[in-house]
Image 1 (cartoon, rainbow, N blue to C red):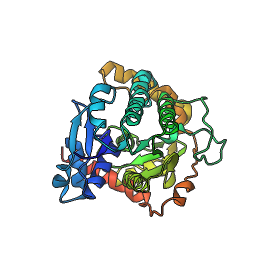
Image 2: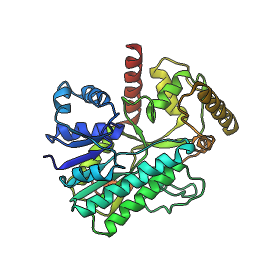
Image 3: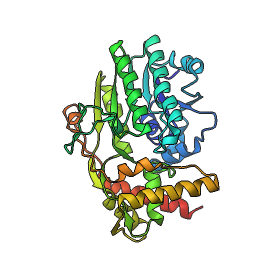
Length: 338
């Protein structure tokens, strides 16, 4: 039986982590829900390797919801290393209950069982959403958390981190990574995939603000390196670059042969458009992706100081513009082939 467990194996981070683990010769156990589709994970493997199918077949899949503590214990008691990637990501604040359950209660279950069964090491994937506001200065790992103007997602991930730190205080070995906006292909209904889809139809418009970015391959490789070094009781911002939303959408639009953005939308217009989107989704009965509160993320210049990780490992990051181009090209190729 494999001694390495990956939760959230069918997500963007989990899928890429599984690829790099299998490429290194491991046969990790990966959790998925009963209803999850693993075909997308196999697609990810085939993006990067002609041997993708064989690598994919090294994964040991287990149907398990991290809220099912009985089934979860039966799996965790047999492993030694855990990469906790599972998360409910949404900027729709009406889904607060679900986010708290999965992100906070689910993490608490992982920590409790890791302590009970003597897990050697855990890597918890958090988010820069758990960082405080450094008043215009770059935020680092020690920037104090503030409850003011936080989304439900940020709160759920912050509370999850509290559970992880509790585990560390009770003797569990491990570390936390706080990635910025993750750039990676294959998941077109979330994260960068949603931005690419919106860029396809947004015309000349763009939103103000900027954000930190990291290629998903860099993130997952760094997670493995930190695990190999047995780093413990630490958290690390994982971020390779800072980019304006205008530049991000310009790169995507160029690759999709669409109009490059040149008209900046004001926050009030963005909020109106979100309300219109909510009404349309309710009429159609489709999932609401954003809440009006999401407008604050489009107007901020959230700067990051990620120098701490450079003191631990030496790493050459992928050029982020190339990462974005690759995502846009793959999206274009896949949507045209449908």
